[in-house]
Image (cartoon, rainbow, N blue to C red):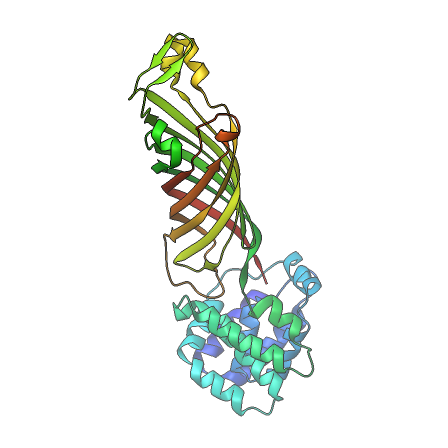
Length: 359
């Protein structure tokens, strides 16, 4: 019975007999029970826009709560037919006409506004515009700010206004390489180095905790004496720097993220493993792990789209990170004549992920 009545309604709608459409719609609603739905909600709302029953439409929207939606879901839906497609296409082609009818109706101001907003939402896919939801959100916010009755607020927030915001926590990973320079007496002993390493990051809002480890190969700048011989100038050494830093974003948009940072780490310079395997006494030349204080600046260039709809923030992307670090090792506290600092610039490629939730 419901299927036949829907077919009749579609036929009357195609013929433009809206009075008959209203009559059949009322019959179908009376035929609903706890087991069957006569309409999908979007079909019902489209029909009410065409039959100009705005008060019935607004009452339906006002009473649309989670319990009512759950009851709809538990019932059987109508068999698949072309009613929704026909209503959607006709509404899309006559959108301005339908909105004119809404504006000229005798429904109250809030009902007219909510009816027009509902029509916008029903037809959003037809816009083929990624920024259409931004426009709807702006209208929805204006409605919420100016509404006196507040009776549609729940419907607006759950079914019309759709805006995602970034979650507080984020995670990132980065692989990098670059160039490091030594200063002071360290530069007299060792040459500059080429670091390579990996970093992981944990972010909270605008703050970022970064855990990084880099390994660099370089050479001695002079002969170094150990118990059984001399490690000659130009011999291979390696530097290892694990560090943990805390940064804070002072600029963060779809193009760039700039974050100064500071933290603490360790630094160690020693002969390479292949050399100490041959001559174990070379381990005497190791500086051992010494505390190192670190400060610097991250400049993160984000890949991906630069312009995003406001309702959908850019939270997952890959990036190119240029990082300058100034390291202050404390070698001199252990070894006289080892005063000096590190300057190292790295260029890394990484990926960042931050979840979103509906506002």
